[in-house]
Each structure stands twice: as C-alpha cells, then as structure tokens.
Image 1: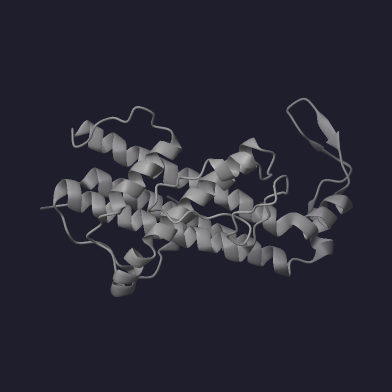
Image 2: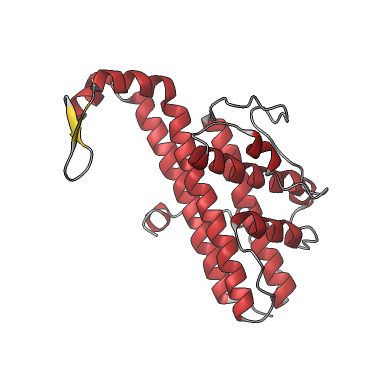
Length: 247
C-alpha cells in the first residue's frame, strides 16, 4: 500500500529542518573559529544597544567578546539543541494529529511532550523497519531524545542548571536506556550549569534524526501497511542545501 502523504510530508519537513539546523550550527561554529577578534569588535555596537523599542542598554563589547570566548561554544550548542527538541516535538504532535484525524488512534489524555515521547518510544519498540544496528541501539537512541527534552527544560525553565527534576522527570519504562549529563552519569551535580560541546550537540542531532526516520517508517508500516523505508546511505544522495535551508 502507498505511504500516507500527509505523514510523509510532516516527516520530510522536519527531517529537512533538522539537517538545516546542523548546517547552520556547523557553519556558524566554523565562522567563529576563523573570525578575527578585531573584525568582530568592529561589528558590535559600541557602548550601548537597543534592548527594546524604547530602551537602550549600556554594555561593554570587549567584555562580551571575552565571555563569548569562554562560553560561546556551549551557548551555541544549547541554542541549537532547543531548536532540535522543538522540531521533534512538532513531528510527534503532528504525526498524532494526523492519526487521530484518520481514526487510526485515540487522542491522548495529556498530549504534552513527555506523553508524546512515551507514545513514540512505545511505537518504535516493535519497529519492523530499521537496520539491525539501529534497532540494537534504539533503547539508547530513545534515551538520548528523552535526555534532550530534560536538558531543554533545564535550559528554559531552570535557569540553565541541573536540578532534581532533571533526574526525576526521565522516561524510565524498563525498555528505554535512560541517559544523563554530564558523561552519561546518574549522579549529576545538581545546581551546576548545563554545558554542551559541539560533539555532544552533533550526537544529539544524529539520535533525533535516526529516531525520526524509524518512527516515520514504523507509522507507515503499522498504520498504512507500507513496508519500505528511507536510507540515505543506499541512495547516495547529497543534501540539497538550497532547498533545505530555505524550507
């Protein structure tokens, strides 16, 4: 049977958007590494900047550069992670909206992101479409995506710091390989700031894109009886940046 085109369209849009986030993140990271400090200084407002439509705010551009030298990579990674998590949340929500619209599934009692992720994790547990390697790491891949949700919450709602909620709010159903930061340890130092590296962001990006593909293929197989998935490696297809970056 054919794929559901609406589900496929949601998948394609989010898949492209996640790759666009990777492209922008990588480009900006490379640009910052080669940028001359004197050139950066000359491009920054001198003395004050327009904070709102009404107020200006005094600041020191040298101090800004100094702090960005120290914290810039982590802040850049945190910002990219926030977009990545928001995109996956949008995918799960829109997938379910389509399935409910077609009466293929029941509406959840609480459709917050944690509940949507639980549904996604339950859906892919019996996935018939994925490579043996992808299926083997699937519990940890789900754990990575769950970890990213909790990191997003810590960044947005907890002043960018680890707290007890970061640990307690994990999706731990006995199948998902629960992940923690830093260095995947459950004894997270509470109160410490969330610090991310480029390597760590790229790892999260791979996990989100891989799970998105498996979830989409599983939905098409389980609900629409279409049993053929996508595989970038088999296709040997380059990213069409002119299309991905412009949406």
